[in-house]
Length: 324
Image 1 (cartoon, helix red, strand yellow):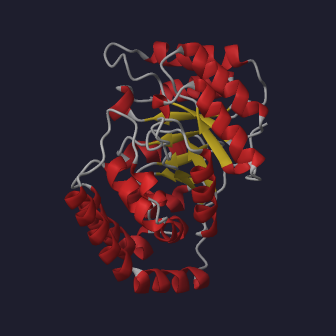
Image 2: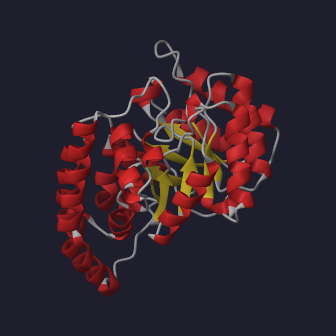
Image 3: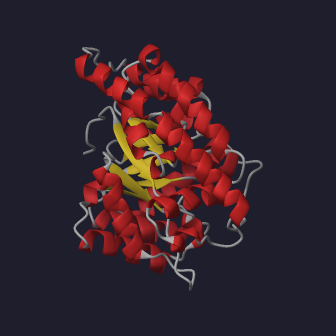
């Protein structure tokens, strides 16, 4: 049986450090995960889009999960993105993660076929994964990210999946950037945990019963995201959203993953964090300095704002509601 939805859950779609041999670096990821937990993060999601997950082989992805758990990180704090192009790779990853008792498996439809995919085809994809994984304790989060997959998860498809696999279909992450659709997911599926990947929508959706966020920004601004996730409504969240748009202007100058890794490298005082998986490339040194410098300036400027928001949250009596 699935766990009940909870509000305010913050999971970092964690970036993956890479060795010189282009393998996931478990030692650095463990250290970084602990750093994020110290900043108030509830969980991490490994090998998602921010984590360059599809670039790594199944063996390395499973070994990383084994290493995280062996290091003492609780499985319930780990969500595993099991997306892959090869169907059996998805099944293998889902079985392995479920066997460890992780928080859940996050799965997007393959990104190769962007045209002509019907609702029936999307349903069949998830059905086959669930049936072939063959575990009643599988906790599957459907992943809506049409910019990458080319497919929008319709309410009809999600309803069919929930009715056929209650308890296995646990929730959905919506990175589609349409708060109206996210709202429909929340209001139509009271028993599912709905997460947004679009951080700016958090204050607007929190009062409706949004479970929280799985987001890439929490790699570089975990304290800010902790505060934003805990904001009960859009009125109180307005100053934070305005500030978030400011930092977005910094991060949108160049590709997000190289920019985020540049900031992580600076935060962790570790230049090895700059490595990326091809075809992604590091930012040139001048651009890297611009991004890090602008981000640090923004980070310093929000200290008072976070303090004021924390004070407001501690006195607020607003409780998120769930509408059936």
